[in-house]
Amino acid sequence: MTTLFDSIKVGALTLPNRMVMAPLTRGRAESDGTPTEIMVEYYRQRATAGLIISEATSISPFGVGWVNAPTIFKPEDITNWQTVTDAVHQAGGRIFLQLWHMGRVSHPDFLNGQQPVGPSAIAAIGDAHTPLGKKPYVTPRELTVEEIHATVADYATATKNAREAGFDGVEIHGANGYLIDEFLRDSANQRNDEYGGTIQNRVRFMLEVVEAVVSAWSADRVGIRISPVNPYNDMSDSDPIGLFTYAAEQLNKFQLAYLHVLEGLPGSAMAGPEPRVTPHIRRTYNGILMVNGGYNQELGAEALENNEADLIAYGTLFIANPDLVERFRKGTSLNTPDSHTFYTPGEKGYIDYPALTAVA
Image 1: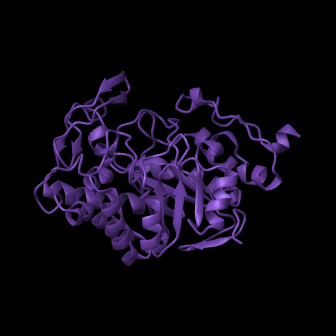
Image 2: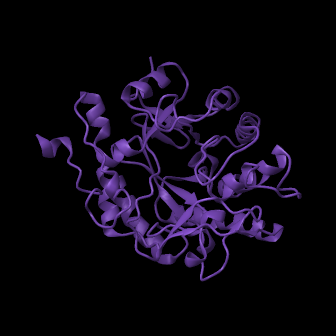
Image 3: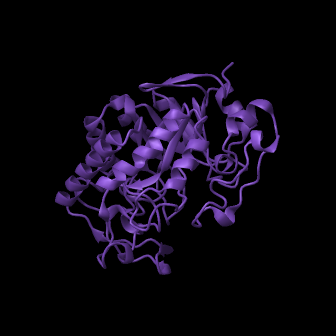
């Protein structure tokens, strides 16, 4: 019987357990995206996770769009992220960097007054969190084919930077209504060229990014995250099962480290529509499958036992419990996450959650 505490080979790595720290935007970088000292401590504290996936990190100046979120395109980014990866490795951990381009849900306030870009000139309904407060999303500028190719190259460059910064691998952010997801789902992609229309065409950009990232490093150092039915950032698709089953089938040829699916469990706060897409992906995808979305210890253990997944990613539980693996193993009580400090500056609600040793 597979448990949360069993080791597993994931690409080039052997993880000591199957509990992954999900990527979590926390807004503790400098205003220009440079990683900070308290980020070093934050990730070090959580190094007992089987794998840490870093917060979403912008691959280029045009990919930026969240206040105090980190970047990986400046020389100082590489240097400062190196202090994070060193700390995680010294504590015995493993860490992937999540590669992010915000696409249409950025804002001119982040882009020197320029329009954000997307697959089509379709604005998302909602508000951007800008340095000057919440502002409605603007209509993006449709990327040209040449710009699409340049963006694919940006992912490859960011991958090389992540490798230089000492990460163990990278996760491509293809979820939650950001650029790759915008190309995938037809609510945001109304193109009539080779990147739009059919499912095959809408998956093309994602596959080109994967190919570029794999070429820049190695397939066994690369994962990708998708969110088939997450409505976040005003997203939907007319045929999520068809779309994401095809995407999973195409991803098989790369032999990636893993495929990470965000889809809320029935009955959880993140629950999506029925039928769920993840079981279809499990049947189609031949590699390591990671799932995320409303799992606790019992539900995570159940998913592994029933062979629904190979890895369970935990988000807010890792925010509040840096030693979550030990707490699950011992069956002890959990700290309560403080949602008011998820995105606020400073140490409070970031590196001050007590570990069991501090409580004892």
